[in-house]
Each structure stands twice: as C-alpha cells, then as structure tokens.
Length: 328
Image 1 (cartoon, rainbow, N blue to C red):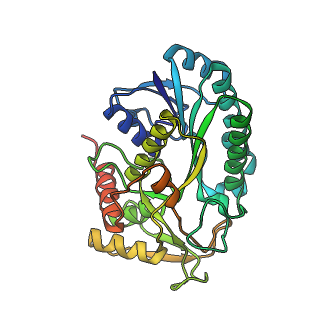
Image 2: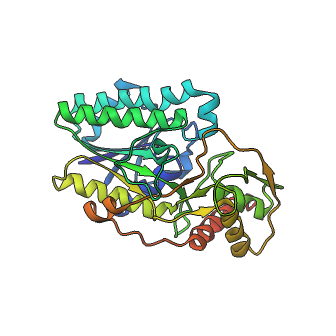
C-alpha cells in the first residue's frame, strides 16, 4: 500500500516524506519542481516529476504504485501574490486540486489529507479561532483553498471517500536533524526572512505595517514548528486508516507572536542585530490570527512537542546557515 505526497519536493512536503520514510512507508512524490527541489526528496521515496493537473499521469501513478492514500501539499502559497495574480491561484490551488480529486475517485483512493490554511478565516472576530466560525477569506489564496475544502466535502458525501483538512497557521523551523528546511527561492516566510537578514543573506528586511490594533502595532501570528505540523499529518493518516470520519482541524499552538517579537527572538538566538525597516501594510494581511487546536488534540490525538519560538528560530537558523555555506 503506497502513499502519494503531492508537492513532496517543497518545504512542508519534504518533511512529510521524511516522516513517512522513517516509518517504513512506500512513498511516491509527485512534484513539478516549480518551487520544489529534487534534492529535497528523500532517496527512499520515488519522485515522479509532473503536475497534479495531469490526470493521466496521476491515474497511472496511482495504479502503478498501488496508492491508497494521498497527502496533498502542492499549490501556491504567497498571499500578496494571490492578490496580484488571482487566476494563478485558482488554477494551481483549485482547478488542479479538482483534477487530483477526480483521479483519486476514479482510481479508488479513499483517504485524502489536504493542506489548507488559516487564511480561510480572514480576520476573525474571536481569537483563538475555532474551525466552526464563519469563514471570510481576505485573499484569493484563502478563497482558492476554501473552494477545495468544499469540493472535498461534496466528494465525501457522494463517494467512498474520507478526508482530513488541516488548516495551517504559520509554519516555520526545519527538521531538527538538519535534513530539510525552507529552501524556496525568494520565500516570504517571516522567520526565514529574519534569519536571512541576521546572516547577511539579505541586507535588510521589511515590517509590513505597524499600525494594526495589536499591542505593538505589528501583525500577530501563531507560529508552528514544521515537525509538529507533520506529526498532525501522521495523526490524520492514522485517524483515516482506523476508520475515522472526515474532519477539519486547525494546526497551531493557541498563542501568537508579533512581527517585532519574532525579530527580537531571531536577534537573541543569532546574537546579531537585524536591520528591519518599516513599510506599508500588505493586501490580505489580518491583524491577528491564532489557532484553537483543541479538535486536533482531542480527535486526532495530536501532541505537539516543539512549542517554543526560540527553538523554532534556532532550527531555522541552523538550516539557513547550512544554505549560506559556500559550495565546495
């Protein structure tokens, strides 16, 4: 029985591949390598270079590898880019996900774990936010993911098909063993950007707005270590394998840090001063969003073990230091 990981050459997907391979699973990665890297895929997994929108390729891969479960990471993830290029996001995140789900149904794949996002909430009235509040995404990125969630609900109602939707909050850090990390060129993740500024890879970084209704005026986010996020995916697969029903669950720690607090943490860990320059707000950024992850803990049995901002930063710093080393 095989597991197909779409986007498995990317940041989060590559960590999932490591975890599955460490557990002795038969793993196949489908990735078009647009933002992912061949070198990020563990050698124990098979890499199929291709697009999730290629229905014939997906069906052939599922049949050949006897795939019974799909963990779907592939997609575009930059909120400001989605505002300036919405059709790219509806294509990559919605239309192609529809094609992938169609291939799964036609080939008899009945278990599906979907990488969604806290962006479906927009700017919620309550913090921490539960999965059952009214959804009001502020960006095409959030909308593109929400439409995919709706598709999964409808497909599960019509077919022998169960899913777990995991709504990520702000993923950061790197594999504690140093095997993988955030390698995407021009990544916009705050902790990666701040660490690069501390290392001198960037000569400065920007803070996008200091006039939000928060204690220090900068946006507050719930930063979750990538390894804890992956353990939630492992718990989701176990839930489905043992007969658990479809569900949607938040992945976060239940408390947030502001942009300025993250920068201060990076300065403490690296012992370096960061040139952080103020800029205007970005489109699509809510002031504060923090997870209520009770459902993941109670239903999936998820137990995070890296809930510490400085630990997250230290793992990111070690990874970025490796990337910054000159090639021999």
